[in-house]
Length: 249
Image (cartoon, rainbow, N blue to C red; front, side, top):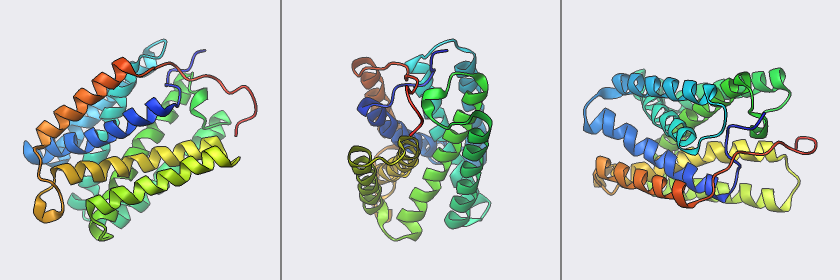
């Protein structure tokens, strides 16, 4: 069966980072600018995420626009869910990040035990897709919590946090090009790191100047990023991932 997730290329990472940034500004638009609050915003995006995942599972092949709409839904849900857990529930950034990390590791462990692999190239069955989207959602939510923890509690600020996560991604890229470290491990590491990168960039764009941001309009920033993603989907190559031809690395 063909894979229903895209091939991991430079285009994938460009759109992924833009999508995570949109998730931050879009989530903040609903919960803060429109005044929905974290609980109502989380419920809204949870409903959208469930609907998109269901459509993704029942479709017979890879559809770029559906796939990325599901990613954006997961990253906006991750934004509002992490903010709800960290702030409304009062468990703090450290507690929220720890809890989400444990949940993500549990999902990946169950996925590997059930399917024998957590490689995205093997996402061809409904069961594998269920594990895939669960891991995606937990990684998006974890990235939001870690990004906020670094920028706020860590004292780096949004710009400093973005630079730190960009540097960490550069290390992952060097390991990919120069070493034989598991490609599956590097993929999930990069996938997790792009979320706090997008979160800190999004916060840098829309948070008040007094909090270290640029105080740009959240709806306007979201619209610009969404337009960029649409253009990227039209001009950058999008094709389904290929099955690995040898042992998983």
